[in-house]
Length: 285
Image 1: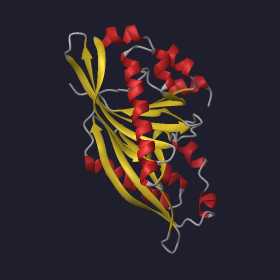
Image 2 (image 1 turned 180 degrees about the horizontal axis):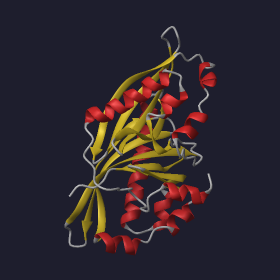
Image 3 (image 1 turned 90 degrees about the vertical axis):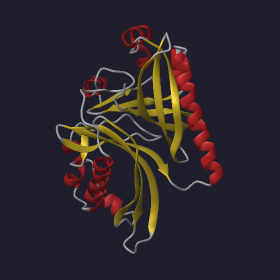
Image 4 (image 1 turned 30 degrees about the horizontal axis):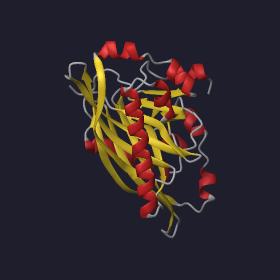
């Protein structure tokens, strides 16, 4: 997709896309959106499946190529159920769906699903954090952050989780130091940020740095530093880890500005871990 088109899909905000205030999504609403998504997939009807998503829609992975789906028709046109059936697939089972973060018009649901053969045997299981959003009275999935297959040994899980959490820590430390080079060194490109109704992609580190002015950001919010109140690897794959973070921003005098929840997809490429995507929920006072 041309770069200019990608920018038109996003809202003009670098780190969290915050639209107008909306009611908080309940856990039941968020999980129901994920159940509808799985049920629609099992119908093998591309249009029905595409209708469970919000647009623009994005599904970042370790090998994300920057593609954004602008509408349901575009998404449905790319679905090939014959290819899926050729793997032996008969249906997909949602094994778990846990709301890990929720707020105004948005929730993040850590899900695990298994693709099954007709005899009920498993092909493989995958781990996804679903970014569920509300738009114009409709609730659906805006993005799917893919941690990857659930097939690691305990030692490999621990190593992947530690590397991912370290990458998020490096990013936040660089942000507080206003060190743009170190900040983008802790990221992967193409890089994605998602918020209710918005998706934005940066193709390169230089493009990301060119679009952000630390001085203007600090002046607009009265910001001096950000602190992670909590940070947890909630889904762990060989090349992808979803990390849930609660962040509080503070002024120069130490007063709290606001807090917000974010989930980062941290991925591995050539032995290096970096933040591939982030989805943030509007801040609370």
